[in-house]
Image (cartoon, rainbow, N blue to C red; front, side, top):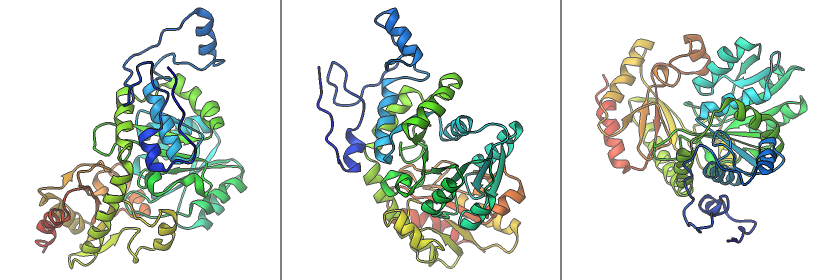
Amino acid sequence: MSYKPLPPGLHIDTLAVREAVDKSQYGENSESLYLTSSFTQPDSETAARRFSGLEDGFIYSRFTNPTVASMEKRLAALEGTESCIATASGMAAVLLLCMGLLKSGDHVICSRSVFGSTIKLLASEFGKFGVLSTFVSQTDPQEWKDAMRPNTKLLFAETPTNPLTEVCDIRVLADIAHEGGAVLAVDNCFCTPVLQRPVDYGADIVIHSGTKYLDGQGRVVAGAICASHALVKDCFIPVMRSAGMTLSAFNAWVVLKGMETLGIRMKAQSEQALEMAKWLEAHPKVARVYYPALPSHPQHALAMRQQKGMGGAVLSFDVFGDTPDQGRKNAFHVIDQCQVLSVTANLGDVKSIITQPASTSHGRLTEVQRQQAGIRQHLIRLAVGLEHLDDLKADLSRGLDTLI
């Protein structure tokens, strides 16, 4: 049974629903879930060609599975890259990125404002094996440029950052990387390709935690690297095949279903987040709000150009507190009074989520690293979902209005 290929030039919302590998002989309308560890081969010669890479074909679900391939094909289409490789989690994607590109003696430049686990992985784990890392200001291109060395192989940024929503100029960082013979990888978890496609601004690699908005309902853990065919084939697939940071077929299928509603969710949640940010900015118990779509954000103009005029669904805010201990106490008070918001370290769900980053997402960093990243004790992160805004405001008011 043969099927017509999709025509070129389709809108991203259509690709999010339709792009996948070919249907099976049964003509299923929803992408199939292939729950199998291995695939039988028609004969020994075909098996030999497929195992050696001379012929395409599904072999073993540690590195080839039709459901996972559908998810990879769809995400690559959304991000505008030639290829994609899925991983067991977002951090597995960062691990695969580094294992595929770096060796002892190589140098990485990374924003000091990225997710805490990314900082730990680069500074501590890869540092054990002789990979050198320099952490710089997210927003100061001169620091990135000054940090370049002859052995610099990778520049890594997330934009906006977690949790302070700092925005970097992707085009400027791409130029710095390419002038020095390095590649730029951008974590696009907060924006997704609905709001921002880093390759359109010169990035070489896009990293995703599919756990977040790609799934969108907090059901599974997943990750991905989107890049050129050459990078995926030559750098990442060999490591995946040996090391097995494998995305399960079931999790890939869940993310496939999640991507079908990605566009409408991102737009709706971004609109909700903007209204929430405005409300928080006017609240007398809130010292500062961090959200790219607010005119008060330092990179507001850049974010609106780079993020299709939307700020995303994550914001952070400071409650008042004269000392770190008081700031922590006040942040905990606001969080603990919530009856609707979920207190969990995830984000990207249709359920709104609230956390104190200093004790959760960045809790394993040293106090010096937290200070360098701007993660203070009175900071609260809010990932806005799809509940009614009046209920979310009332929930936050329980804590904010009772702060002393």
